[in-house]
Amino acid sequence: MFCLFFPSTHLLSSNSLHHLLPLPSILAACKRKEQDNAKDRNNTPKKSRLVFTDLQRRTLLAIFKENKRPSKEMQLTISQQLGLELTTVSNFFMNARRRSLDKWTDDGVSPGGQSSASSTCTKA
Image 1: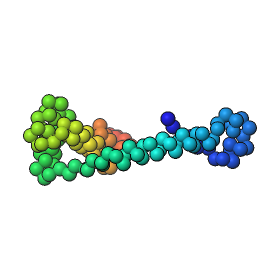
Image 2: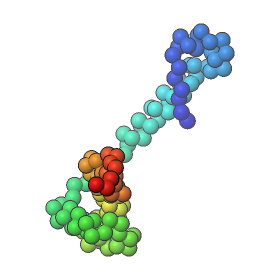
Image 3: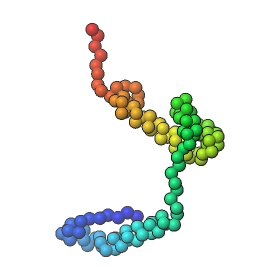
Image 4: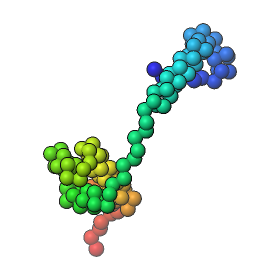
């Protein structure tokens, strides 16, 4: 369910909308939904952020330099060897690929190896 909020002056001035949208019931439904979600979040403890050990980070980076997209089987082996969950290893490689693309675009070079600045080659 989603909530639409319109300025109250717009609802009052528009003859077609204020008859179709009973504003108090919409707001009440939105408040109930937000309160229900808040209750659910308070009952479950927040999962703490994982910080890789130095050995885990160095190993993952070394593997990433050799293979940007290791297979699921390889990721499973890595996760078992490093004592990490498969999803953690998978997310590491996904984020590392994204970060390596960001470095390319920050340097002004597109991921395909072409410069983002237009240049023309002429024979002298």
